[in-house]
Image 1 (tube, rainbow, N blue to C red):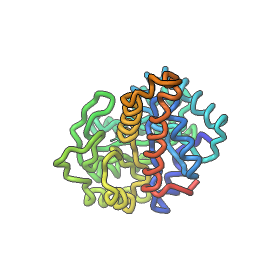
Image 2: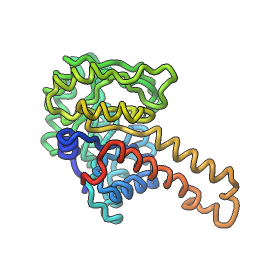
Image 3: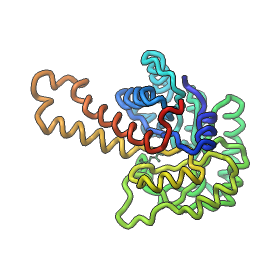
Length: 287
Ligand code: 13P
């Protein structure tokens, strides 16, 4: 079922586990994530960046693909199709195309403008029963060619945005997209605890899930994180597996030129990564 992320995240927040958001890039990626979620009886969120949206031909192509897969693969666990780091326009386009969840990332606007735009999108999402993620304090690192400096969110600003009635809130706490540098200071749990106190039971979102040590993930969940985004780790696993297969010369032998065979090791690598994350996040068996 394609569903809003609201119910699955409120349940995760209350029962202290997190639902993984895994970003998709193509059919193989999507299929690997959906089959793994079904096998593990885990709810799942499929993340789509605006760049990946363009790559996959546009938002309605993605909605068609995901809905078709849910039906054809007989997926019965709850699946949310979510725009990742959406612009104001992108969020509206995804809502129109049939996404069940959107993120409006207004963290680069002055707080007043972030509030004004988020307020408008909350009303739209609520009227259609969709979930909306907002962001305070830019997440660092690079995504779709946009490099953010990494910020620690102001807990009071988090409260202001949470009070607008968003479904979930992403707050920068020293997390960054992509690989963490050697000298990374780790997550700022003091600020996370303060934010958690200010926003009540609102599910918090941890971006930059790649490379965060397991004990930090568990601590973040204990402090209210109920959604964790993973992108780079699936990409690294996919690329390494396909590259290994090609370098071994296997694509040149037998039927190895078959694109389905060529990509199969990458698909298996994504399945393994997703399995590992769902187990760590505690979402296995929660669907
Ligand atoms: P990583 O690419 O670091 O896994 O982060 C993913 C993410 O936060 C997507 O919004």
